[in-house]
Amino acid sequence: MNSTIHPKENINSDLAYQKAILGSVSRTFALTIPLLPPAIEVVVGNTYLLCRIVDTIEDAAELSATEKQNLSKLFLEAVLGMIPVKDFVSPCLDALKGYSNVDELDLIAHTPTVLRILHTFPDKDQTAISRCVSIMSDGMSHFHGRQTQAGLKDLSEFEQYCYVVAGVVGELLTSVFSNYSIQFAKQIKGHEELAIAFGQTLQMTNILKDSPEDHARGVSWKPASMSQSELLKIAYQKLKDSMSYILLIPENEIGIRRFCFLAFGLAVMTLEKIAARKEFSNKSEVKLSRNTVWVFYAFTKIATSNPSLMKAFFYATSKQLRKLSAKNF
Image (cartoon, rainbow, N blue to C red):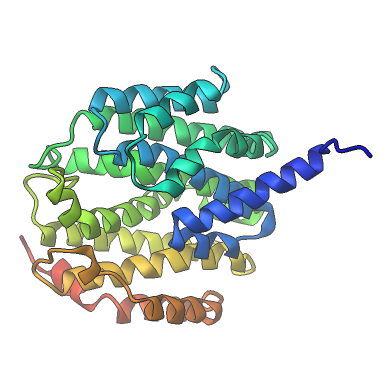
């Protein structure tokens, strides 16, 4: 009996791993990514996992800035095929032996699996993903040495950080969506900056939500000279740009629209909760309940094909954000 594993069986096994680990490392993206058309669901899921590996290196409090920079460099070289992938995996797992998140460690151990899937994608998508991972990895390496309790230098540095962590993901999504939908490629032309705002909005939400935990470990990703209210005002402007971005997605591309609108809506509701309080000491205070998430998930089925309903949702759930936005600081 021939026990050889055929390439097709191999890739099916790889894809099964990708789907399983996605659910383990991110509840939110495990919810949103399957909404995409199958042809791009696997591409976006794969990109998320690659970005998550970069994130894991950044989040490892026990590593020095130099160690993080070295590991980020090795990871990028492995993704770009400049070194064997084991030359990243072994030193990374060794450096993170005290790291508590076993799912993220498992993901790093399976970097070869994630890269095998990457190499099955069309060249255009592979090029876009490599660009995204390169900018993110290099950008995070730059910021590894700039972590302080006081925060980033100014708004410009903050926006740059949000770009290399998430704005570039907005650009990547736009490339993948454009490769898939000729109509979207036409409609987004000349409005590409909205894609950056879409990614940055999600990152600003995470930074504000996670700020108490970051502060506890001696780090802040907020600009040192800006108040929470000023940041929320900027976030609201980016939310408006994000809404414009979603409305440029063709109405017949329900999966892509719903993927973006679900992430957008969760960000709006989280930022509104943050805006409703002067301060909070734990992110659980502003975390959306599971019930809220599932109700909104169901709502997106109805709203995504109705621009007026999407706009009405945004208006109805951003009352505090609008109030702050109207104030002069």
